[in-house]
Amino acid sequence: MPEFKILNNIIDYMESNGVTYNLVRLSINEELVEEINSVNKTSFTLSDLQKAADKCLAHEWLTHFCLGRDRYAHLQITPKGIDAARLQQKAEQLKASRSLLKKISDYIEDHKGLFLVFGFILGIATLALKILADN
Image (cartoon, rainbow, N blue to C red):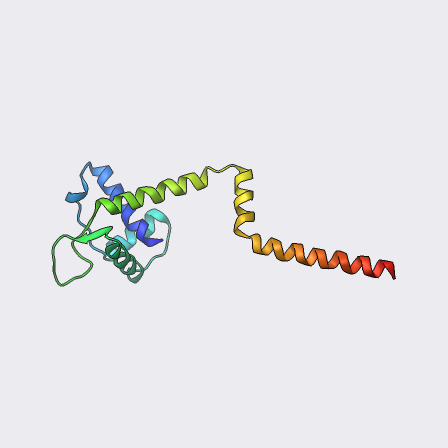
C-alpha cells in the first residue's frame, strides 16, 4: 500500500534528522518515487504515489502546508498520519512474529470456503464409493 510507504518515508526522515512532524515538507515527484522504490524494493509510478497522496489527504494523514499550483507539493504529515503509519508498522510486526501454528490457523481461517468445498467433494466421493462398493 503506497500510502503507508509515503508516511513511513516521512517518519524515517523525521527520526533520522531529529525533527518533528511540523518541520517536514514533502512533494510527490519523481525523486520521491525513486527514493521509495529503492528503499522498499517496489516499482511504484508517480501516478501511484499521487493516488496514494489523495487517499492520505482524504484521511487527513497529510495536509497542504501552503497552497500553490501543484496539488502534490508542500505536503505535511499530520499526527493522524503518524499514528496510522505506526499502527500499520506494529500490525506488520505482529503478523511477522506469529508462531507456525498461528500462521496455519490464520491460513485456514482465510481459506475456509476452499476447505469447505474440499470437504464437500470428499464427502460426495466417500458416499459414491460406499454406494458403488455395495453394488
